[in-house]
Image 1 (cartoon, rainbow, N blue to C red):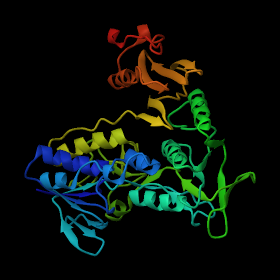
Image 2: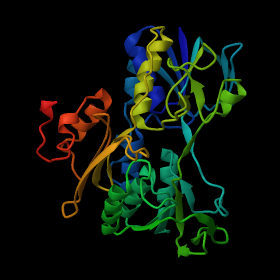
Image 3: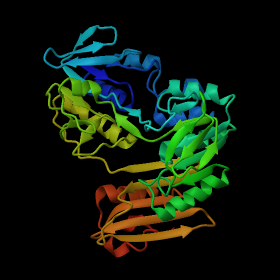
Image 4: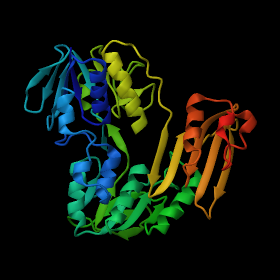
Length: 400
């Protein structure tokens, strides 16, 4: 069996690794647009911050790929798919045949269509090459604005601050991490970030990047302006669906797949940031990892269902431990919410309960109990008798 994998990000490489674990004989060919082997996205931020050297960026050594008999074709951009003949076309026109095709070609940074986005000094951070270009520019341009107060934006701001830059963050919404936090948690996070010396602007819509040829500032709706000389856009990503769409595969916001992560062509599967499953485009690491394991099994005919992934992020945001899982901002009255904040310690906990079951949680400034709460959400354990006590520091989870 010959399997071609398009993309060498997390979904592509973990799929290839799982294929090899399950079948020693399957032929695995991975085509990658980048010139570097797979590196975890969090490593990109740490490299940008100067915390890890280039050689420690990568998840696996070149020897590992050889030992696993996984053939990686770096800087080989796949331009077309021919489903009828079961072939792909690589950039220079060469065609490759597949028995099964796995699309794991991820997503690309979204740069909103504001005026001046094409000026010198405007960056979007998605690849290692982006990081190199940004670091080179930063040497002589130390006044940085990050447009976007999501996870990537805040982590990029931290990295820039650790490189000695003067950093400001601009967020369109009225709070940071609007998808992961509630108003109270976001307020605590904002205070922590500003304590680091990073200025935060909320509720501002960027209208124009100022400057003749290079960045000199930002103008917002309402004519407010700030002076900067480097702009990093962290306004989310969009799935790379072009080649799938042109091949006649069903697409919407992402490449549409069924519960077996199969497209509407039985020989073409997909996983990771590129897919849309049951109306959802996840774009998070846990989902890509889960999908990679499932899709490898299904390519080999095992018929394993992908049940979805509870949105969960456990990470350090500007040095602060933050865990956000499940539904954290319910809009209906049938949900109960319990909170505990210790401002002096910089901690905040919140659980969301629905019919006796934990459906969402926020844990900030502490790791204690975070993994247990995450497990309660995924296992749908009934906590009715203990729901008020869950946020207490000394709660014993073994009683559940």
